[in-house]
Image (tube, rainbow, N blue to C red; front, side, top):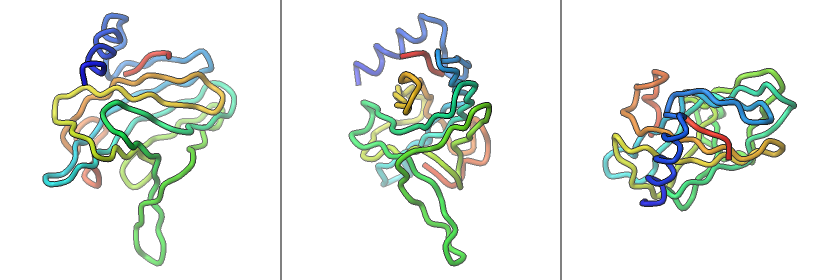
Length: 158
């Protein structure tokens, strides 16, 4: 956990606070990154954000964090009138498009996490072509930030 706070402090010193927008060298911009903590009695949190790709077509392949031993990319699918969550191996980021990770769509699951309201968690996003990006995501109550987060529980270049 100490490592997370050191990285967050370093990011803050460079002027990239949570909620700011930054372009990577390859043109990936991340905004509105935030995490909903686990529900009472649970250990799984969920992260949301918006990814804008101003560069060539790319894919988000994985996310890692010291706040969780297992982080997975997920989406929701409608099958037979039932909404089901499924793990995905990547999220396409087409050129000149925005992809929103949000409830009922793509999102990031943080398993066995102990994040709590007010924490700032460092997430590292691994892309197929672009360099890794480090995101500082505040842990907020469901429904805060981008709104409508009732379904689930900042950044700089690498």
